[in-house]
Length: 119
Image (cartoon, rainbow, N blue to C red; front, side, top):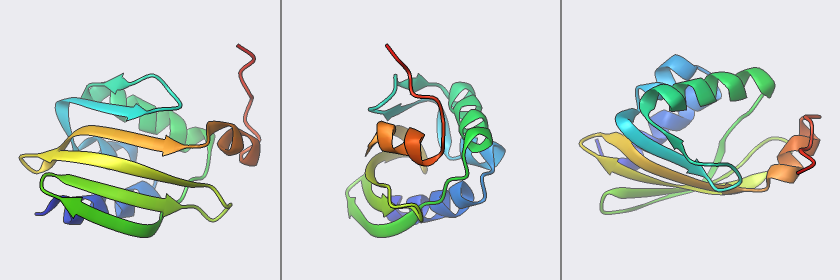
């Protein structure tokens, strides 16, 4: 499976809000760094992150573009509420080894009526 194909499957599972299935896309020592947050290290911690996030907000990923360059897939996305972002996925041996995402956290919190940290 190519990096682009893996990310296409990742998006389908993300849109089902299935944290258990999401975790299976990652290496045991993977890093998921959404730059608005601290990096999440390890498959177990990534699983917990998705469980927490899927409980906190209804999220959807609508693909704008997916690019592939070697072992990397680059996703440009939007959601149904107007938020936009991009993600970079480093795929090693058919699983995500490193992921970095860029999106506007303040807009996300406001759109989903979630608390805004004060510090």
